[in-house]
Each structure stands twice: as C-alpha cells, then as structure tokens.
Length: 212
Image: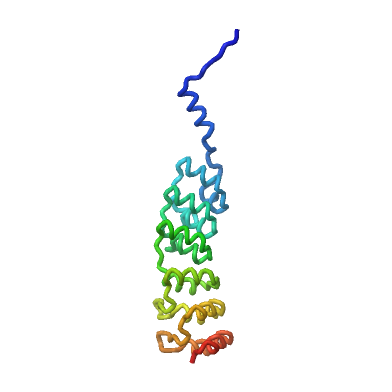
C-alpha cells in the first residue's frame, strides 16, 4: 500500500514563497550601482537596504545611475521611493548630473517623475564645466534656459565659454541665438574679451556672426 503525505496548505505556501525569494545581495549597494548590476540592486531593495542612504562617494544610488545613463536602474530606484531631488555632497541633484553628463533620456524620465529643474542656472553650470554636447544645450533651451542669464560674476554662458576657450560650446550657443554683442560686468564685449585672450577661433566665430 502506498502512503501519501499531504503538507498543510500554510506550510506549502511558505515553502513556495521561500523558493521564490531572491538571494540576499552578495555585493554592497555601492558596488551594485557603480557596476550597473540590476540584479544586485533588486536584491538590496527586496531585503530592505535603504536606497536613500549616502554612498561612500557622497552620492545617492539614483545619482550614480542617472549620471551613468542606466535608465532601467533609474526607473527601478524611482519606483521604490528614491528621493528624486536629493542633493549629493557636491550639492548636485540626479537630474543635474544626468544633464551635465549628456544623459537627456534619463533627464526626461526624472522630469516626468517630478524632478525640479532650473534650466538657466544649469546652463551656466554646464558652461563652467566645459560642456560641449549640443543635445545637452538643446535640452536645456527646450526647457526654458535663458542664454542671457548671468552668473555671480556677471557672465552669460557665452562669456564663460569664451573665457574657457570652449569654441564648440560657443558655436552651439551662437547658433541657438545667444547675444554675440553681450558685455561682461566690466563693460568689455565678448569680441574684445576673445581678442584680449588671443583665442583666434572664437574671434572668427564672433566676427562671422556680427559681433562688433
């Protein structure tokens, strides 16, 4: 005679649930986001790791994922409660880092989830960081960036680009309508500044576009 043993339903359900649980993380949350290891990130989330804790590099997991262009990881973090406008140790948000890194697709996801953006200030920051990516500039302009806004020193993004001999950014700005006859806080024109600094390509760019 065969004997059949029937597990209690509750025990059976617990057994199935246990089998379906992911393994515990085998690397730190910091390494998971640095490496872009989505499986390890999901393990951390399942087992209760705080995804809004500061990592050893002073950033949050969302910042790292955004800066590195990992869109699935960004969406996963947002879905599980990542603080979208948190500032890292350098005072940057995930959105700012994404834009400065040219990750405009990530930036759109963050904006669509409610991230705050000061496009004009970020344009100045991009110029100060020697940005050259045209898509970044167009993204900021499409979201209301004012090319004539000035920083604390009285410089517009074009003046910053001239001071830093960033011909590519200056070209993008001029093509997008930045004022070529803009003056610095001391009254010096963009063209005079380029001449004083001896930046031939910038002088030619400004002259071709009507600077006087």
